[in-house]
Length: 126
Image (tube, rainbow, N blue to C red; front, side, top):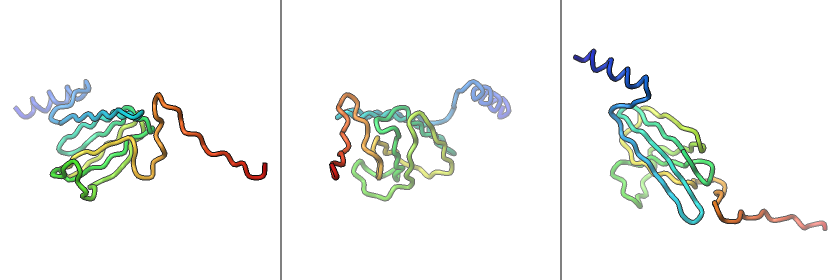
C-alpha cells in the first residue's frame, strides 16, 4: 500500500500538484502601495514567491508561531525576495509570516498612481 501511495504522489508531483502543505497568500494595497505574496509551507520546506510589489521586492520576517500582530520578538529569519522570483528554504522551525513591500534599509517604494518624488537638484555653482 505504501508503494502505491508513493507512486500516486510521484505522479501528482510530475504534473505540478503538491500534496500535504499549506498555502498562504498575502495581499496589501493602499496609499499607493501594493504587494502580493504567496507561500507554500510543508513540514520539511517552505517556498516564498513575491508575485507583485510596488517596491520591487517582498520583505519577509519569519516570527515565532505564538507571536501576536504587534509582537516585538526577534525574527527567526529575515530575507527579501525580488518581484517575480521565489525562494525555497528548508529546515525551518514553526513560524508565522510577516511580509511587506518595505523592509529595513529598502529604497522608497514606487507608489502606483501617485507622482514619484523628485530628487533634489544640486544648484551649487550655478
